[in-house]
Length: 80
Image (cartoon, rainbow, N blue to C red):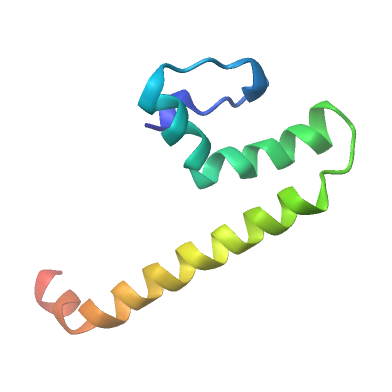
């Protein structure tokens, strides 16, 4: 799924069919790359909504990942 993240080109003109369009927007990497595009390519300050949304999504992913880690921590020594 990472192959469809627009790194160099702007993701606004990127047309994806059906379900791919929904998953393309929902990926956390897309909002992070958009922040970089605003600053580096367009030379503008990103909107507060985009920064806040990216921050909230990043914190949510961290909390979910940490909860999974704590739940499975005892098994890690056995797996490794």
